[in-house]
Length: 267
Image (cartoon, rainbow, N blue to C red; front, top):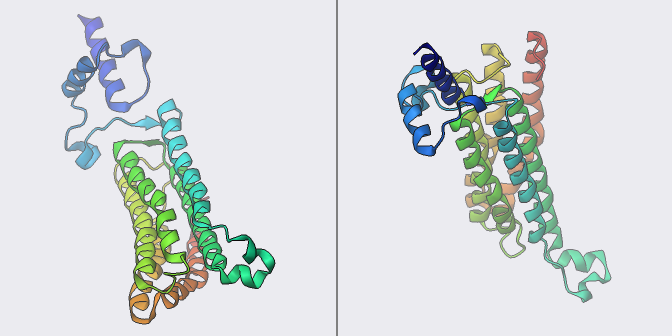
């Protein structure tokens, strides 16, 4: 009887923590679900908040590595798709740079470079955020899937806003701005939930948390501000608004970095 109790306790620890324990693996999916219900996994309440005691993948677990590899592959795939937005001009346009630019390669190439930089920054930010976590749970994975969907959508909105025939239309510029802003806000939501559920291994002060929030929000603020500009003055004017990121981004980043150094936090 005592041995069975110890086994039941071990099963509960495995099912609610997500740490692999081959000696207590359930024999079937039905058994797995029954044991999860018996252990209280996946219910509301407790430290898990809305998601309850959801299965967590520890940083050293293969599930954590597979999840991270999947999201890395999504960013790489989105970068690869960007090249499809560049149309190869006909042979007669290759006589000079002027005729090549007249074909519209310039706007397409600019759109490619902007989105290439954006996606790379998204990937680097995701790496930095995941590095702060000691594990993933269902909510972290779910929010990352939402963000991955928006990242994969970037090549489409890039093609729309950089097409020579649509470059000055307001809607493609606005759609691109919403696409980028939503991806940033979703990652902020993911990280805030991870902090609330105790998944973060790097603790920061309230002052640094506020500075990082302002730094993160400054990017979608600029992109969303470009939407009324685009509808009032055209798509090109809306895109010019994005140049503010060259000032706002570094400024808020420097402030957050200075506070991190003062707090002795290595970000």
